[in-house]
Length: 155
Ligand code: ZN
Image (cartoon, protein in one colour):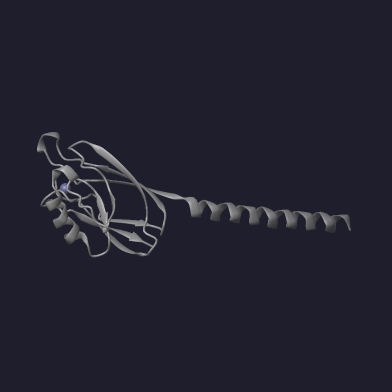
């Protein structure tokens, strides 16, 4: 009888411990944040990552490094836009001019870094969109948006 009782207690303890572990894990998932590190491909008009993946509504801390040579004078930024809006935002960015860091005041701009000089690293923190989809990111420095781009996949 005594032996039965103690195995029952152990079984209960295992179940309770498992339940506690599960609840801690799911709480962690809800508050987890994504940290992305992205750069340029050296002096090229290209990001070194063409695709990033995040969860809906997740906090994203993104670090963007301009890896162009110091004497290249190449400036870049990282701008996240609504699906299908990269060309529109890129063109509006050119029109927005240097005072605005070539980023237009547009509801289609979801997140942005400031312009990074060669060798400079900039950061931005934002919430991933609440709606699943494929959100393009581009550099809006004049002439770059058509080729300097990637995709944030929100699941
Ligand atoms: Zn650029």
